[in-house]
Length: 204
Image 1: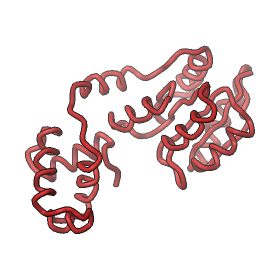
Image 2 (image 1 turned 30 degrees about the vertical axis):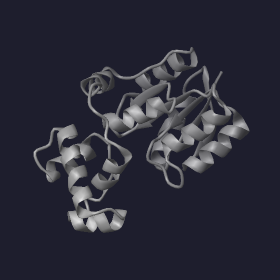
Image 3 (image 1 turned 30 degrees about the horizontal axis):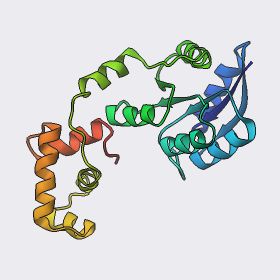
Image 4 (image 1 turned 135 degrees about the horizontal axis):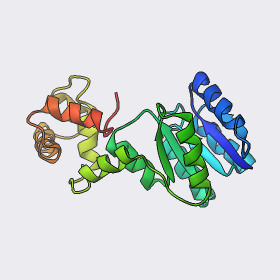
């Protein structure tokens, strides 16, 4: 039997996953978690074969929970099941050690196929994810500071206000914005913000 832990903060989605899993002859649900911190604790307790992990979780997000689990259990096999289609978020999940990536809108049959593939030691990402990652493979990555600057754009902050919040000068913010727009191929700060949100570089 493939022993599974599910991690999602939406009760209806957890119930849906449970129904799909319990309907399979070769799978059993050993535990469910509603946040990242609980996921780490339940993994330590049950040592599941497969963990189905959402990314956007309270208390501890899915990527940080996965990193915490894999630090203690490097062999842990985690499949991300998320609504996020942004390449930056997907790449972060795979870099953190995810063995598979699925979208929540995918059919139950696809989900159980991926569980079986990952349990057999394979990796699995949808073709659309592979294409999206390939599109940005040669992009110059934003620095941590540039992402911090970007994260203040949705609030409508001016450069001077961002500088105050980040304890840097307005000229430094302007320089970061110039670099950000070049890296994202954006014509202005509004487009840069839109691209960053769509790709999962920043969240709102």
